[in-house]
Image 1: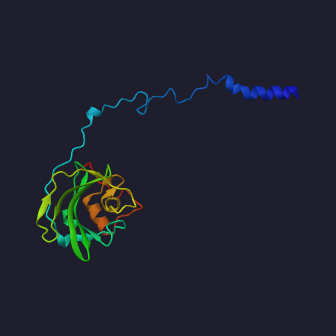
Image 2 (image 1 turned 90 degrees about the vertical axis):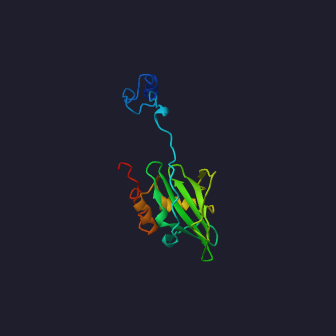
Image 3 (image 1 turned 60 degrees about the horizontal axis):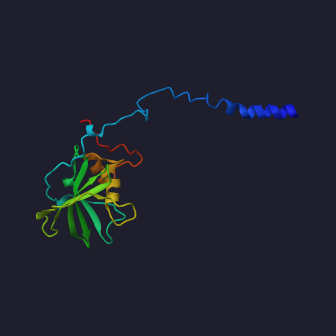
Length: 196
């Protein structure tokens, strides 16, 4: 019985005796993902810069109703299909959006969504009575899109129509999503191709 006890004790202590000699077989391999030696120079990456663009005219005939669950109460949102711009340089999707209440336009805003950071910005607004009367906003800034559940429509607008996995959809992809043709099971079908 004593021999069995000593044998079991020896088997249990053997790994502890050789613990210093046991090494990971991958420790000697080095590659691009060697976190201890990887130096990244942030100064080589150009900082993001927003591209200036002219504000397009509002086309009330091209308004397309959006399916937004968390928008303004007792109001509907419409996107001007003719004003949609997907800029490949700054990766911002810009558009005119109309808010209708009681079957009349109560608000016309020219906005942009930056899909990679989850932000939006208002550039201008137009008079609901005279859509040719556009007033640019001088001190507008990028604002974070609020999380789901708030009455801010930008989250659903970005997720359901303008963006796909953090990048803007192509112009064709945005228009397809407005028509209800975007395939939710294939998140990469509307990605913008930056190689052209």
